[in-house]
Image (cartoon, rainbow, N blue to C red; front, side):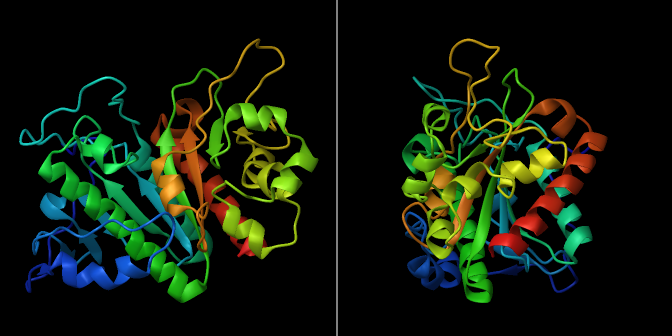
Length: 329
């Protein structure tokens, strides 16, 4: 039976999978990429990267990382849904080390890609990490992500290298684009949490004028804010914002017109909220560049819990992505 969160590549053609050297494939791309710096290629020549002729997908060493190239200016990544646990990589442990799996996020990401294809006739770029989070957390700096293990570090470089490849393709083909980092949360309030690198406290305490004055600075939408005259308050949580479009389609989201910040009047104290992590900061436009980023934290009930939930949500997300592209890109 297929492991949860593990998509298996189809058998390659009779010519066999085409293997390439990682440094040859990426060194030029990595040097040109923006968004918080590029992942350095392995120091030694590495024949672990392969292209599968039958699927058109790239795979990293041991197939632990998968890249499904697309044609739209949209990149989806799924770092925390994998289930592969190679014994050669020790389990991550220590103070502050998080190993909880974002269950069904790979399936949710693939459902979203399929729905975007059905909606637009084109696919987004998709990058998937199949290693379990106990072995590698790709949404962290390499030190905390891999804890010094060589195999885990190599997978980290391949994962972010594939995202860099997708970013370079989007930049060359479209001039700008959107990066969505797909996660899952276990908070009590069943809504999507959209992370733009602003904390929950910042969102709760800043008004529209404050957001307009901020104009995207220190957020993962800084590039978009610089390219448009639209007020940043509208981009972040107005009717045409990502959260606003999701809310209008029946998917509760924060920030949005309904929930400008994570606080809920009927619940005292600070409401938990994920503001965006390493990948959103690295691959979004906070430090410059033309690829904007959003970390999407998906609630479980009604979104990723069942296949029917995922398919219904994916249709909504595909419509929102298409509308967002038409509006801002």
